[in-house]
Length: 452
Picture 1: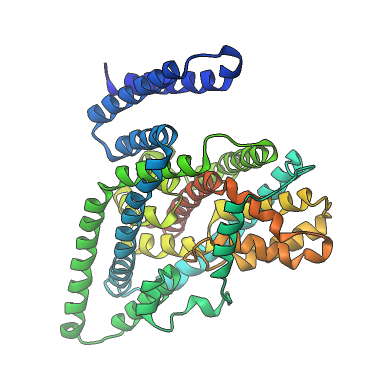
Picture 2: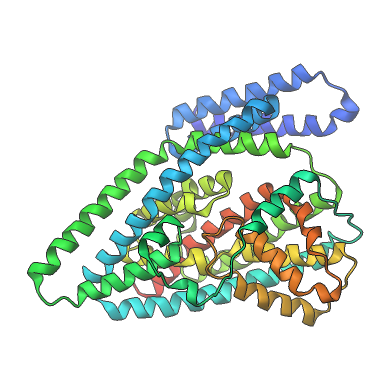
């Protein structure tokens, strides 16, 4: 049986198992039978991955294995989080040197400083338009479904503890000031991607201004060697990705469970519906306008998107996304500039979620926000969400801060704590859209620059 048929068969069995689980309250099937069917589906997917021998296939299979392990052995599965933590640590060691090398090489190697300014203006313009549309889609979706109406949001002790832990790290965020590094080592340690980008751009411009070829060439050669080495480093680390994905999914299922309740299920459904609408109604038309070869593009970015979905981390997908976009035909200096900058200014999935979640909390508080109040809330979200991609729990911090700013209307920030019960599941969807949106943005800017 060829790999395509095996994949279809495995997905059909998984779908059938899902339906049987859903209807089992009426069918009363034996648990061992359902478990056997799940194992059959897993066995088919393992054979598919073995035949396919691609990283995407292995990631997909380990995702399903992780779900099964988390469901069958929840106590042991919680310990598997160490696998995803190891992977994320390795990825973070790659990001700063890779960005530095590729940006400096792209600027100083081509000595085209004016192009950097042009790309910056075009990228920021694109980011602002698309993220504004994402905020609007989130508002439309939550106003249509009214998912928060009548919801009784009661945070459990685990959610309150998690919320307090995230809020305790809250720091003053100056949108403009925080773009610039005060210490490059500190920026690297704190994983402030945008600050690393700014330092690398300034360093590249300074190197381009060096008039002596004898002094410039060694640094350019060093950056060229460093970039190639870091891409090879990425390839090595990526083979840990399937294990990391499996560990992340096992931990998520073990801690969150597969069951969702009432209004929170409506919230998750509304978010995923809005994300699909955003992809189909916004990103897809943009792709058509710039004449993007969509099928080839989706095949190209499938690995970084699947990594982002399973680990719920945009950073985990960054090095691989840079590599595959370059192979797709986008010049390295465009990829190195636009993609990491988008991680701070073009988080489409996150901005959509924030507008949707803020109104959801308002609905749960019994507050009917006017159109003007919702627009004001979105403007605040647009400002506060910039440049905080490196902050752990940034989405939750922004959500609570925004709701607190409108507490005079009767909004209760503590109501947002309950959302943490399903935040991991929502984070997977919004992170995937973040990566898709930034990969598309990179191609759009490259097209505007006539580089593809």
